[in-house]
Length: 349
Image 1 (cartoon, rainbow, N blue to C red):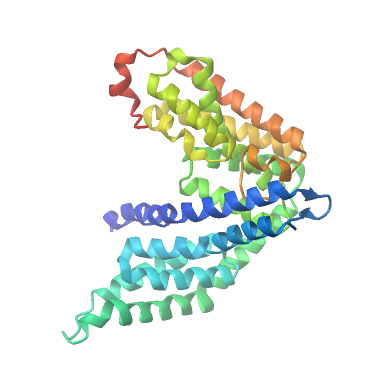
Image 2: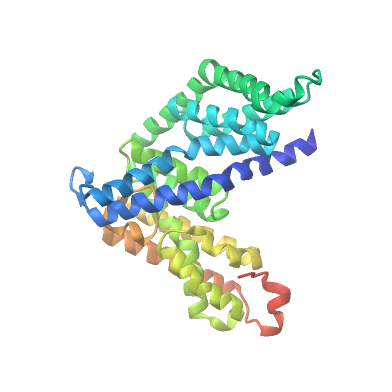
């Protein structure tokens, strides 16, 4: 039992790892199409150019697969290939029931464990060839589908609706507190499951017409890579040659909202880097919330500047978060010698 509990994180990360390319495709194409088209007051993003409209449609198509892919590959992590089909079915149902990514995670685990249980059945030799392609997917899909429709789907959808309603009713003080927490979550594991919970919540709020959640999230997304990139420029003697080279890549990734750009630094020195990026992102997100920064695209970083509300404070919030991160990490770090590179940095770029 304890061993299985340890494996749960691995199953979840399997789903998240397969979902990330979908998020990148959807997020970047939606952000680009909106950024190149513009935003009208009161209407949000208006995409009329046929090329950009097609780009937007491709991005939306990718985003529509996000929850099913998450569920399908969580089930894959548990039951191998027989888990994929029922997991995908459960994920689509979760999306249709408006149970969001939480519903997708639940569907993925149900599908995976049911499929793995059926795999253990002792059946006649004549049935074994059709078990992985017919019996297991069919029965697993029926079970996960029935549970999603009749048991867990509606309560999860109700939870998401309650969270949305609560958020809409939040006062300014609560919004700042929420942004502090979400900003910290975004930076904590840089694209991992904690990050995805905050990101997906912000993206879901866009669909509900609440843009002031994604705004602070969009600020927090780019602060870890930009902060670490700026830190290498401000105090190069505290970073190895490989880290300084990684700093340029981090700056580029930060500009297009790829939080994972800070991972090489966190992997090499987690004790100093992770607290610095968490504090910087949390403060940046809180500043954005204080000034009502909104984001109309499910993406972050300066690339979404044309579709944010209050763009000046969007930039100011990013600069404050980047400054806090760079100052804090450089204050914590000590000068390094090149002899330490291969032993202590852990950088593999």
